[in-house]
Amino acid sequence: SAMAEERPLAIVTCTAPVNIAVIKYWGKRDNDLILPINSSLSVTLHQDQLKTTTTAATSRDFTKDRLWLNGEEVDVGHPRLQACLQEVRRLARKRRGGSSDDESPLNLSYKVHVATKNNFPTAAGLASSAAGYACLVSALARLYGVEGELSEVARRGSGSACRSMLGGFVEWRRGQRPDGKDSLAQQVAPETHWPELRVLVLVVSGEKKQVASTAGMQTSVDTSPLLKHRAEVVVPERLELMMRHIRERDFEGFGQLTMKDSNQFHATCLDTFPPIFYLNDLSRHIIALAHRFNAHHGSTKVAYTFDAGPNAVIFTLADTVAEFVEVVRRSFPPATNGDQFIRGLPVGSAALPEELLAAVVTKPVPGAVRYILHTKPGPGPQFVDDPSQHLLGADGLPC
Ligand code: DP6
Image 1: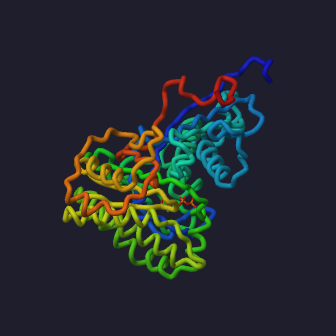
Image 2: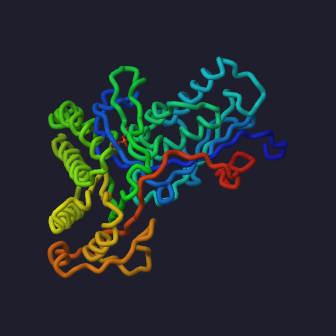
Image 3: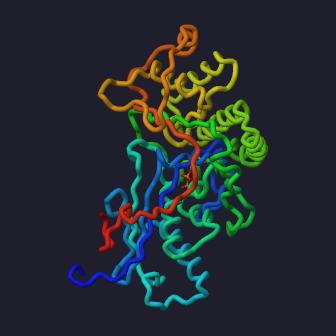
């Protein structure tokens, strides 16, 4: 109660990144354990631009588990949230050899309070469940002193979340076991491996309600013969190839395969019955623009990829960013409402040669792209030491 003297609180804060798959995960072989039908590979994005922050606290005074998302209290009954909580507590119990009757605030029978927020607008439609679950699991594990392999726990929140448990280039190996013990994320290369690699997130206007990935991929598994072929034949080959391109920092190969894999994912969506459409006219406009840009240069300078929403993610190298950003600005002239069109890492200015403009920029569509977020590969989850950064106060409530 408010009158009672506050008892000590165990509290930790973590941050976790967003990741973008270049070999896509689409389809489960086990819905409860979240086991995929194919391995996938992603790039972890830098948390300076996109991150989730989560504070977890526990105390004898808490009467129930509670969770706040961006300040709003939400129901903790969600099965995936419960699975993550239970798994972390189980690992903590295992670690302590069963004893949980001490008086410290870390007693495993005490309830937890969790507060979480994103440093990017939820309305931007950037996949936040991966960062969200990676952050939740990191914070709970730290709170209970659990170390080691945690991607298996994050996977229970959202499949793609297991890849946000590591920085740089990350493979999620599908595994073979029915219990999922071998369905884990593994770092292929750290974020420092390819210093020139850049990421441009084209946040588009006119957000519409999409088919959620969980439901969409279930229908695809049930109905798409192309998805079956993709999982059995195409992805195993592509994964090997993609790892080689990354190892060799071969942008030509990396970029082409990234685009092809995004296109095949969307082809399996069209092959789903009833079909699912995540790409729209604007996505197709951006795809065509990227291909004209590459054709003009005679090599792969930019590579697009799209997930279960309309935002485009572009991979490129640092020396191409300024020119391509200018091409996007000319193709989708921003509405002059004072909003920052370019956000994130600084972008230099580029004058476009006449022939590039003529060859690449066709009919401009004003206002179609809301803004461009410039970022790069980054590290995995981080612990926040500064107590002023906690999202919960000494009373265990959001501050
Ligand atoms: C298209 O991880 O959101 O972004 O496991 O059901 O939570 P659940 O799905 P989720 O699916 C992500 C699908 C994707 C491709 C990818 O990130 O690999």
